[in-house]
Length: 433
Ligand SMILES: NC(=O)C1=CN([C@@H]2O[C@H](COP(=O)(O)OP(=O)(O)OC[C@H]3O[C@@H](n4cnc5c(N)ncnc54)[C@H](O)[C@@H]3O)[C@@H](O)[C@H]2O)C=CC1
Ligand SMILES: O=C(O)[C@H]1O[C@H](OP(=O)(O)OP(=O)(O)OC[C@H]2O[C@@H](n3ccc(=O)[nH]c3=O)[C@H](O)[C@@H]2O)[C@H](O)[C@@H](O)[C@@H]1O
Image 1 (cartoon, rainbow, N blue to C red):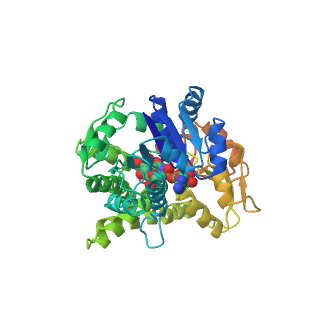
Image 2: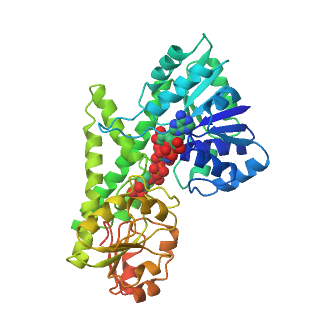
Image 3: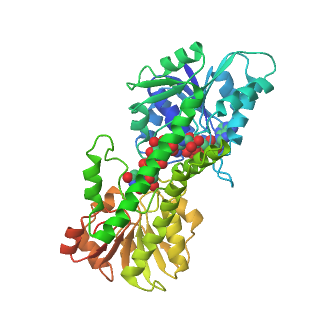
């Protein structure tokens, strides 16, 4: 089967490359010519572990190709995965213009049956707008279907999440579309949940919002732990053993960021509001998350008193480990706040520094280090914002020797407080005394 994927970002590339790895002939349509050029040469424009290797294997076997020309993509296959961006607009709702464009262009250029598969995260009932758009712009009546097939992959773990998902959700209206979807996903061993398209669309926003809610919940518990002398990690273990709760997504810290939770929680609140439902619970979830940054800055101030002209090392800029993505990363707000307080910063991240430099260019108050140890030189304290594996394995004696003062403020709880005390650090973390 030939498959077309429109959008060469995190989701489109993972979808396209993994489907070609499963044996399909895939064409990825991406608007930005520089990205297409890199991909043709076997290089990813993003960092995603394991994906570049699969890309090179598929290129070698001639199972994947890339183009900027959407008409070429529409002609290539009956099956079109729509993986374009759905960014946040000023009022919090999702900007669906990229999705609309793909629907419109498909309608204008299709010559035979098409199955449009919504992989992008979209508000409930977007499938109806896509259908209307295709009907409106098609030149002559041609059969087509629209399916909602939300994606649940996590950045940094995308290949595994795509090839071994917990579940596949397919919102479908016709038998023809259902059997094509069944065929596409045959090689993947996972439960498939068939629903109507509106339900599938809603499942996606509900999943992300629920996960964000879990994190905000544990972050409030962290605050309570700090006031009471309890330990949030043990509370998370203690409640997480209950299968009804589960341990995942109960790691307290500086809060959730990334290209999805912030925009999707906001969009879900707006969707509810548009339908006359006040999702006040999610507004609180957002508020708690926003307050994490202040909580962290307060800790830094508790540790160092005035921050003016203090040189501080920062480890971790990506919104989570194993990605170079800094979209809505908590680090952006933390770094801005520290600079506002007059601190001088020495930053290090294994993968996200190039992206970060575009927002925060090197200057007299801010520099980027070659490695995590170099970042510490002449600094009064180390601040940890992302839990990269290499930070967990750091040589703590070396860290102590390089810092001017043995102070660590850890926004991700990567070390054991008792061990840090033994090593001679003044160690501040989130929700653990
Ligand atoms: N990043 C993630 O981990 C996940 C994202 N999602 C959802 O998937 C969607 C895509 O997300 P990302 O891949 O992160 O976005 P992205 O912004 O990384 O990629 C989107 C790509 O689509 C391209 N594009 C836009 N219009 C196009 C057109 N007409 N023709 C060809 N290319 C076009 C853009 O140039 C861009 O490269 C969003 O709705 C997002 O919410 C869902 C699950 C996971
Ligand atoms: O729709 C999406 O785009 C994706 O959004 C999230 O995936 P992702 O944003 O890649 O990353 P997560 O692992 O979910 O982490 C999100 C944020 O929550 C934070 N987090 C996560 C878990 C936790 O216990 N504590 C915590 O603070 C992370 O540091 C990160 O900033 C979801 O986990 C995916 O299922 C979904 O497909």
